[in-house]
Image (cartoon, rainbow, N blue to C red; front, top):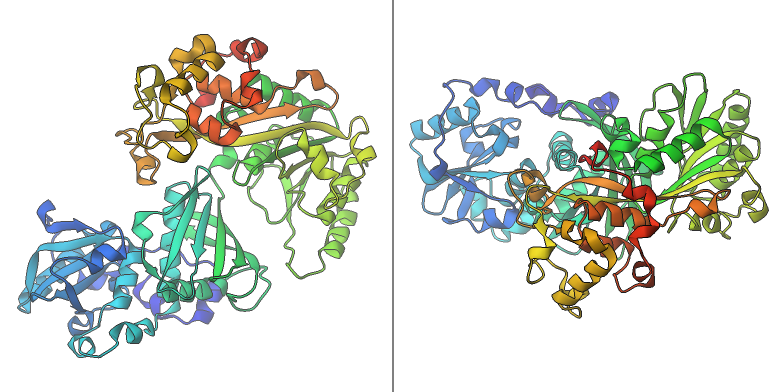
Length: 593
């Protein structure tokens, strides 16, 4: 992005569809007048949210950008502010701190007689910097105005600036492996929440605390203008909306899927983050499937017809696992996908995106696609997800015609997939589902966080619950009683059990930044059910037991996902019932994802 692009019209931006990633170097070329400047650590103050900037001492008074005649592009990365004591501080992003432009701006301030504060750099995120610009007066004249907060809330920002803020929110999600970005607007409050789903947890990063509601609403309105397949021309806070878009983050294309829900306080916008290159290239072993499970999946996909269905909770990696399985198919098989929308690119597959509107005639659209599909002489079909009667009908039509079908579904377990398909909502005839060969393999999986191998704590050495323990869940179970339960369930493997160290270490510091110190990567825990070989079924908590016995999973996480250890399915558990797991050694299939 160049300096001139910031002032281009919205029409030009929409024509490009995708705004390229921000580049600091081009935006500050006009200020490169000094050698790379040095910054002393004593000059730096880190501010992770807007409240810390507002409470900074000495108190911030007004901005100097107009007086210094700085261009808008530079202000995305550095913002000079006068304090009440007459000194000046620079609010600057971490990435721009050592740029020549920041050093040049500092020299310019000194040359014009300004005195820098001894703590002259407030380091924050670009989104927080933009919010700070919105609440601070832009000069002494505006400082004297009454009801300042109301007048500044009406400040107008260009669509380029608001789009840049959105890119910063997405970038944080990409860099921290978030599956979803959540923007929950509270229209009656001054500030609203920005959250992320990371490792299945709803995380509120400190760096995005206290962002103004109006700023977020204006940002969403600008971003919606670039939505493809949306069900409205403009962003509407009072109706459900969905669509998709792409953007460039750190040199890669990121696909985003937008779904908003009209709630009591305001819209809740959930944006699914789908990177084109990453986990879609992982193998079943790397995802966490045990060797025996991998063998069962490959045999079902390579040698037989019928349907293979992956189920799991939201964000459990169903589509990723499905893509990993399909990549194992031989090149002589013709593969066609029907997806809403396409999530991962699959080599050698013909991928068809079906963008269905919330209020559109999706049934007719599906029928047209199916008629064309059945004349395409394919051998394998990927049906993105069975989520409504239209996709259920498509699934029935394809499976009963002898085609190999791969799809995903939301269900509580592998055995519950049949009940879900035959429910009154999806409406598939149970007689069809019970026909031999129609349902080949039913898979249910969950994606659990893995313990950091460097700092995880051996449970046998602990005398009490760690400080991060969920009090509401464990307040009625003394620690010694809980240890006794673990010994009963894990037997000889009890000494191998470990628990998360929430303080983290240098090896898991990336996860510590996400508020999840002590974890390092995630792994799939799965169960596989074949209607024709029911006797081979092992419940999902058997796989969880095995991985915990190797020290890879926290037993507390097992209780959160699969029920507390007082439950009957744990009490009946015996390590002797899982001989296929006992033969598996610690291998690469448990590497961090």
